[in-house]
Length: 134
Image 1 (cartoon, rainbow, N blue to C red):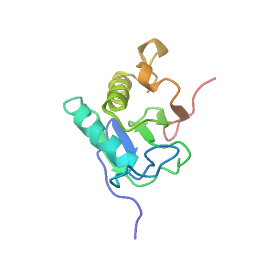
Image 2: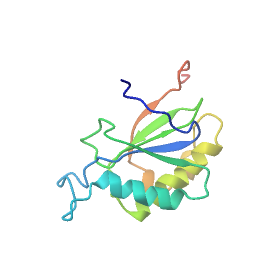
Image 3: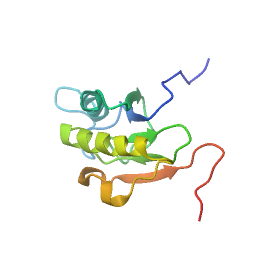
């Protein structure tokens, strides 16, 4: 049995739908997980942008609640976290993802970064078969 399933192969924000709602709380008082709330906000914000929102359980970044992985074929990927599950965070993530999708290799000039993603980058991941040049 495979742990993998097929997903759209284009620019995508993969959101951890099991992430904590905050560093202090696992869920909201009504039982919602932060990742599920962020995923819903991302889907609403991404409509018509060409960036897919994909969900999966646990990105193994539990210390950095509300995490996402930004990826596209042949481009550097990024893991970001420490987001609040809000419409504002979703807007910043999707605005960055649109600029990322338009880039050649996944590098968005810092001057184009929305304020809402600054300080949220955790790791960059080179695409298969490539490394970042010195």
